[in-house]
Image 1 (spheres, rainbow, N blue to C red):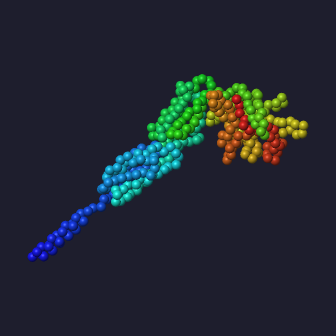
Image 2: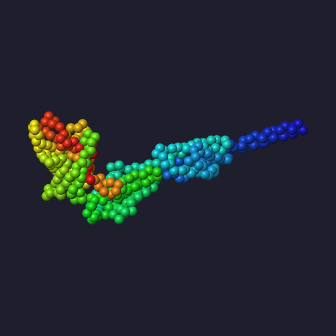
Image 3: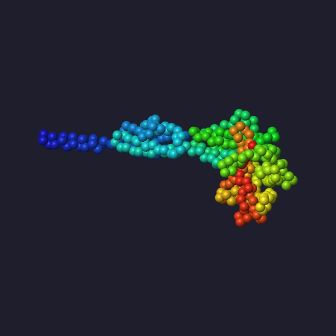
Length: 350
């Protein structure tokens, strides 16, 4: 009987021990949801988990710090990313038994703008000049105090840019302002210019470069428009014998000058017909009226204006800035072209 009891006690103990082993549960760790895609401006992020045991979390970079860990949530604090490239951080979560990894991705600093909008030109009437502008960081617009009486800026409600608000110009003079736009560590400069053709009518001095040497133009004149809206520019090629005058129209806030015949050059050899020409990138003259160049107002740092010959899109497929007075024997063609009587680059009036 005693032997039977001992066997029974042994079986009972084994059963109890076996039941205790079956009740032991290993700590679990599961990532439920992540919120780990951040803008460049940074902020808070979190990882939802389901875990048992003692949970710990670490980040492999200094700019992303673990701020709180529970069995349900891992919270993170992410600094601003002021660099252009995006970046990532690895978040390691463990409960001693299992380890999980999550990747946090942060955008780079983005500033989107239209370079063609950095110079805003308008006539002397009141105007609203919209621009497209978006950034990862808040945008600050700085207008010089002296120009705030006629110029302001309004941000768009959807964050896609804004508009310059320009009041009517009754001063009788062209005016303009530099505007500084700052976002994060990036800075852009815009210009807002307000004028009409009438503000540039009158006498000027000028200068141009030819073959590395600079020459002066002491007696430039821009006439008022005639009944057909034509302006006359004189003094580009003026000597005691010749004064080749050039006709221009006023379009898109600039004077537009096309290829045109301007007179005759009489030498000791053979008289030549003289044309005002735009010079292409090879150096050939473009004398026809379907090619043009702009005489464009340019704002200087002191607030004054000069007029510069510059590309206006008037020569298909090329960016041009040189002009010339070219001589031809008879009707103009490359065969009758005799050379540039005056070749002018970097030409402007002041």
